[in-house]
Length: 461
Ligand code: CO
Image (tube, rainbow, N blue to C red; front, side, top):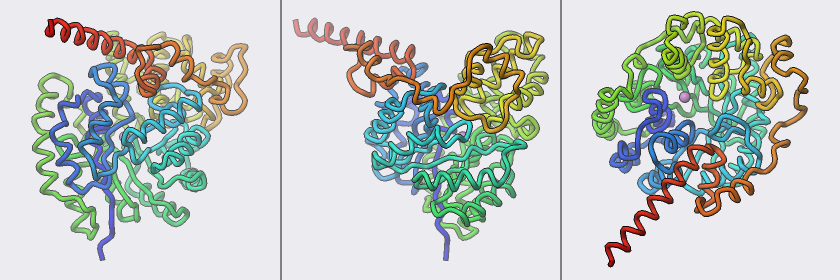
């Protein structure tokens, strides 16, 4: 008898984010959504992560509108999003009322499954989002961010899995954002979780180091309930193992994914010219498609590596890359080994760049790193470097308890500030998450509307 295995197609969110810096516009995929709905995927990851920011900042799109549009075309397949727990989709911690409203509105606008993670694997930072997701009637997927460090033992992952189940999660995702989880490690973790927890286990990996497809194969063998893949034209490299390749192989091994390869071909054919366009306009740098084993040495996710390269290129210091790559794990150690995922990857990366370029370690400490030492991001996974902490904190004290509880409710003030610019609760949430970008977007929208009204009046005259 064949065993069921769920496939989550991630082309619209993570592949989009990992290969082309989340620049896929609604018009790039609008016409394929109805076909994607027929492919037999368990779910499609379409929202959250950097999509929200990118819609407002680069694409002149209302992210909520994008979600509603996708929902209107994808009627049967579950829609999934990635949420950074207490960070929602931003880069700092928000108040609990913001997190709750954001989760509730995400579900109201069409999300079925919320994958909730925290960059430090701190369950307290996921608790509010999980609770609200369950209240809203959606599927809460708790996340284990996989990383390699002296304190991230095999057992620590299993323990976190058990904790997430206790917190009420409907499933667990093992998130290997850097593509560094080896096939055997994946097999061991999934097998242990299958034994110790009773909720489904999903595995998310990237092809960066070339391990991805092997790791997903072992995930299936170990009894995982689902895996994440990307349609082949947007697969590989910093993106994910290819949907068609995995489905093809797994079918032969006796797994029933429910995915129809004929429909996949249609989807892939549709996305070929989209990829061509990004190759031509430079949005897709072919180097992200390479297999880069460096991540195994430096444990730097693909997205972070390309960020470091662009930061150094911007100041004409690309020759310092090797030094920065050696400095990054040291900064990470000083911070108590946070997994390198947003926002920790940016924080650690920027500090490493600064440590190298200023010629002195921690000569300048970013405000985010200071906030980290104050406890504004939660509990560090391991002990932090006390000397660096002292330097960062100065006379300030570390916050005791949960930082989010010290933040005042953000919604009322944001709503009052925006006045007529905000036409919905969603607008206010966009503003709280990305004040500058959202305000610019909302102003432009209001101007366009005013212009349209004026034009209509003139037409009528
Ligand atoms: Co990912």
